[in-house]
Image: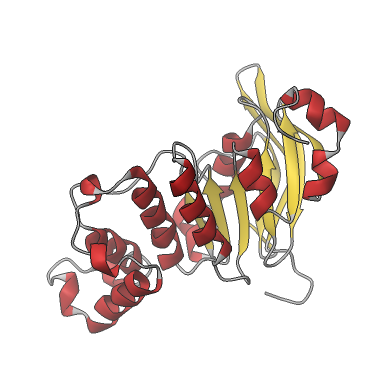
Length: 252
């Protein structure tokens, strides 16, 4: 990435569904290594924004630029190859496979071995070493042979983040990483996010205002598909429009 180049730009993005504007002229730019939270009430357009950035949905207008390259019309896998990764609000793990097997699939997908079907993945030393390193680094080694279906929901969310990290992303989008978690599980996942490589640009949608304020250096507020506020956590906490939108839901 060249000096001064933004890892991610969203320029005047609009997304229409029939006569409904889910996004209306949203412009955002992100700095290398930035921690940004996207917040807003239900229906604000947060997940639609992520879907446009990652290529799940095409924008009706505007463009998405990744590391100086216009990726607006590129498919998801091409954006992933450029360094973009994402987790989803509802987990997308393979429940009948073990943690190790889930991680192996994520690692294999980033190599030429994704096209190889005639040998078991364990036959490739580089692949097994990468899996073992990830499991060890993220504290999952003792659970490596557990099936995903046997894990708590909090552990599953941790595995999802590890799978995203297996792709060695430069920009990581986290869609409500603490949704549905207990207070204790939220603390664990929050700590995991905080220890991610500081060079990675992290953008998260977060319903829990305390988590958003704790993790983010900068916060963007969406409302009815438009960006209505942006600033530091302290600026957002004291913004009267944001307080009105949230009807006093713990901003002060």
